[in-house]
Length: 272
Ligand SMILES: Nc1ncnc2c1ncn2[C@@H]1O[C@H](COP(=O)(O)OP(=O)(O)O)[C@@H](O)[C@H]1O
Ligand SMILES: [Mg+2]
Image (cartoon, rainbow, N blue to C red):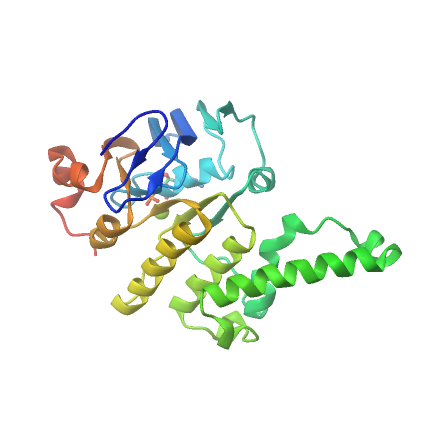
């Protein structure tokens, strides 16, 4: 792998750019529990970056720091070359960062279409008062948002369930709807917390394909947590390995696969 400050070219010929997100010496505590201990790593433009490690390693906590849900006690988050001030999750979202959750967080009673629409909230500029005063502008905005959402629905092949309440969907499709909602925000950086957990082999293959397509078609940078090592090896350009809140490995899939500390802590044992 050719690596420099400008970026590198992957084995499959994709061009990876400069650093977009840099975590510097992040420490996060919950009372006496240290969920993240002095971890640093970066994410480059166009990259698919995996975070792996045993349960309780601090992986979700790390995504929560990136998305602004958790505020670390120590360390800095740098985004596009500037230190990010303390931000609320909605402010982070406005910077072009969207996420899915380890435990699906959709509006179960609402249709797929309406759930995906909620991903457009950052694009809805007019408020209710303006909508009443200035019908034309609100309508134009509504049309634009609907078009963006329909495009995502086509892309993820969920047209057939667009009117279905989410509560009626099988688990695998709910995960796909959650991805659709995140994509509706047109993120530059997409954070996926175990997008394939609990899926069967076929569903995993579908989700893997969609993740690759999103990266390829929209150029979206992706950071994902995943347990299935086959999937990680297939999808990701670089992998961060966490164990008990510490970083124990960082590199290409091949590099981490042959890292003895990683093998001892994680790869050598079964995680199903
Ligand atoms: N909101 C929270 N409050 C208290 N402890 C938490 C919270 N979130 C995570 N933790 C703790 O932090 C550690 C790391 O958890 P987590 O980030 O969920 O790990 P992973 O996603 O790798 O399984 C665990 O010990 C967990 O119990
Ligand atoms: Mg987790």
